[in-house]
Image (cartoon, rainbow, N blue to C red; front, side, top):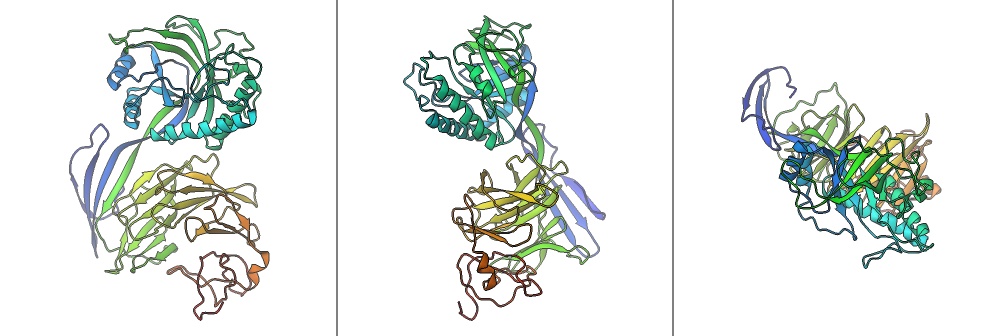
Length: 540
């Protein structure tokens, strides 16, 4: 913890545990004019997923082993990687013990993971379970739908970070009409995973699943998991280039993007543990999913007197109903009590650069920060800044120039990202949440500018290279339409913001969806969407 200079006393409640948990650290700082007390609770570890290339061996088993069984095998077996069946309509076993906690505990033993989804199979596959449509146009959409289900299953295990998910496509008897829809299905699967920032893999046999058909797909699968049982049990000398044939050559997915299941169902015992059943053995030189850990801090502070100081300008401010308000000054969040009028510094401890803040009400608030390595983090509070917790944000592959928060209530909000596309132009990406920032869905954004919403559906975005573009949405940001270019001539909005230095003038309003602000010289130099309003004199 970084402490400001002054007289201080540190009272440590208890030592930090070496497992998941928390401890408190109370610090009292005495200054010339005021005293403040911090009570800080440290979450020892949090985790997220990341992609790593494994050159070890692994195994897969339909029924989930227990945490203790996995520990025994980690200590005694030659395996480093375990396959997790995320689910799917064709999965042959039920694993109720598969939870985020199981993944966490096993990852801390040292295991990394193959993530696999087992959904509909080939139209020619002999099963009563759901199949891929023989119509390639339908099949490609099925692939996209299964990708959405697989992502949701991974996120249910708290795997919100980078990951690769493999689709299990079992062998089938080809009658000449099944390979095209399967190929289309894999294309849809890959497309949708990539749209969500997830790497795409697939499992199958060269001779029975015809995986070489997928080599010419656009987009191409990131990784392949080859099912070809060339051995009957564990072999320390096997490689991912074990054999060529059935159209498979070593150049296909040869650059650290290949897994090989070389031995089918067989029994193995390590450390006296046989896992109560058979396993399949795999050798890897390709991408798998690992768990990375970080330390998360949640800070609680008592009310304190905070001198604002004139040297650091306010970046943003807002007054809320009841007289409460907040201000973003430098890299700290200040809270004003409507009852006492006292400003309180509620900034989370050890926070990175704050890009934006939003408080839809006096209790719920959100911050978005950017670390030195350009990673984005969302902080949220449900008690007016007494405590903060971090939440994962969608992965963005390029550096973000600016980020803007907008929340209409405690659950419904948006993050608008501005990213440079050239020296003079930028693009925007929009993410929406309906659960208070726990999960995010990408939507459309025509401009890399802040968005303003009056409710969950109706919003505006304005700006552009010349500052003369305005778009509106009526579906929460899924689609946007350009507003009437002539609306700027006679439409503005009554200011609805308190504490924001806006140079607006008296106005009239002619269109319920357009709102405008004037520049200092009275010309229309841009748009400030402030929501629907009624002029103070009742005119229209």
